[in-house]
Length: 214
Image (cartoon, rainbow, N blue to C red; front, side, top):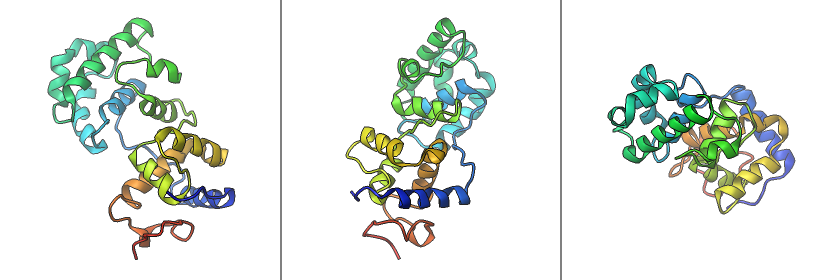
């Protein structure tokens, strides 16, 4: 774990990220807040690409809680059976769809507490929805961000809660909205787990990681 970087270094890192990709986007395909919520819930222990392959046809016929309930658990299972833990995920999606239909008039709530009260929705999923759909500066810490935060010193911490807090506390406010997308994409394509692509890294001169690849 690298030590926490100073303010000026973090500011320079995110200035570079913004210059390279001013409006980073999440890679989960969705058409509204509900399909985003479902896609993120399905993405646990699965790849975005795998979720997208499963949900393209699904979201054409079930893009609201009411339509998902009409499809039913068995119908949903057929669409998502290529995704890990698909049976439990199907149960959760049907349960959360019923709650949204009955308690929220089919709308996705915009508070973290309300989102986390839904079956199969943890803090990370709630933060993704709050950030991507409701444009709140919420930080969803996945394995990529946890690795990047600790490897670079941008947001070091021994668990995801500490890393999330470090991002909120140490990254300048103007970068908070897109911070988690810049970090996820950097971790997914450049600062990979086993063999980071340091020669292609735009922050390599600012990164204290000792095992840089040449």
